[in-house]
Amino acid sequence: MTFNQFRQKKIIKFIGNKYFIVLLFFVIWMLFFDENSYLNHYELNKEIDKLEDANEYFETQIEADSKVINNLKIPDSLEKYAREEYKMKRENEDIFIIEYDSVEKN
Image (cartoon, rainbow, N blue to C red; front, side):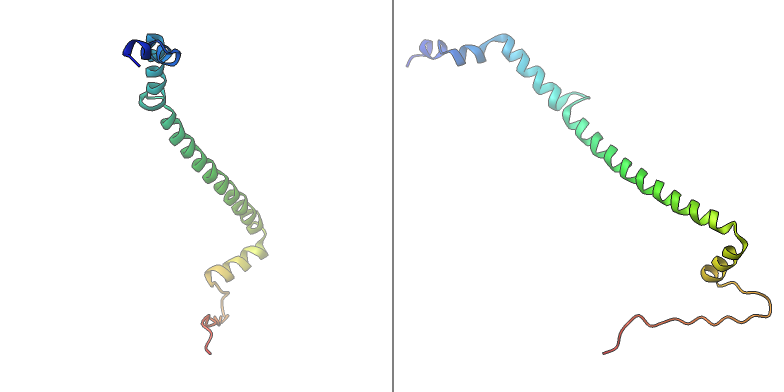
């Protein structure tokens, strides 16, 4: 097969077309090298997913903390919370803290 016969094939004519070459260059440029490339969009989408997950976590924490704050507006539960979390006591009262050993002995 000679070079001229090789150039006459349809696929070679199509690939050798200057418009196809420009289009191919443009697509490659837009996918990989441009500021708004597919790779940049992929990284940004991963970052958005992480931030949305963090947002959901913090919203659930806000809801839980709001429940605790609303519960602490009741004087009896405020006293209970102070006694359990901060080991507070009333005057003339003794508190004994019992700690259990978490390691089991065989």
